[in-house]
Length: 490
Figure 1 (cartoon, helix red, strand yellow):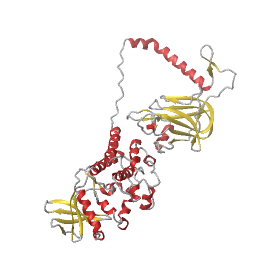
Figure 2 (tube, one colour):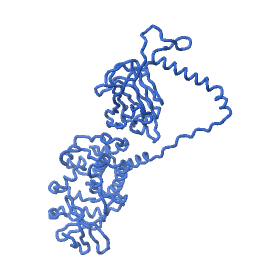
Figure 3 (cartoon, one colour):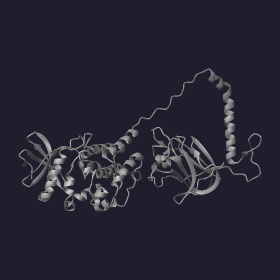
């Protein structure tokens, strides 16, 4: 076929605009209705297969029954002079494959919007008994803020034949569900798996199972789980990552039950991520009168009292005072050796520790901010849905490397969101030891704006702040932040 040829005495071929493993797409004109259309012509070497032609025609007729804003409409189908064709809505613009070219990830919000639109189209099709079976970036069209899914039913017609000879399988293998790779029947769950692959690629810029060949890539999913996206790109919200990983479960029963359910999960994440931050409460205006009495004669004694308490605290910390005596504290007696004053230990580096089942990444790039000497910069954990880290793991840590073995006697932490709980543990060889004990025997603490922990002296080359419970953050999620960390020793 060539430009100017006519089909069914009404469709005129224009220029060729795309070509794939099964068919070539032409710009065309429907002279009866006077509208521009897209005409997909099956390749000649496939058009000679009578069984394939019949399946192709049958699936095209089924797809023509779909009418949804996120689905490319099918208007007509037929065979003429050995040419099998489908007439479709002409939708000009880039595909998702164009957007992902070069391994460029998308913003999580944009990736979620695209996935939600694809799932809306799939939900419409699934509700009418139509399964796509070939959801991939090349079949997702994006233009003018609109997203449409193309080629419904085409894959089913082809997959019942020998795709390895057409080359179509090689271009589609990345998005096949495990049951499709094993030759099983694909249902709506296979489409959801493919959307999971799309989301993974949009968020990370790479496929979930990279391999040297497409066939190897397809078979990897039969025995391996994908790396969590947050391992590859910092800042991916854990709730969104959870949607991706559930869609990529090997067992269809463990995936979402429907496209609508998966879309609703993404909708919930979108609502949470855009929830406005409540402004902090306005301070009550100062009212003169009763308060002025407090200011006038109580302020100086109060300051002296606070300074005295601070001096006692420092004395207890460095060993100059001990509990006892008629006033509650007394100079440290000769009962034991005098403890030297605790001085700062240089911290060589700060590294997040997020062991399994964590994703292995907790804003790693921001960790140096916890030891940069600037309290206005912070290392934050990821944001979670609840104080218990979303119920998915026991904790997350920040390892402070001391560049050699030191006797550690105290740790000082500064935070911008007090209220989270933590332990302090020695760390060596990639493993954490038992919790360190405070001077009073305690093994866990609640973070204040500035928290000073006096410890039973212990030698170590690294100390880990192991965060076990998070505090509410301004964005409505739960996290912990460390603005400055200091380790003190002899």
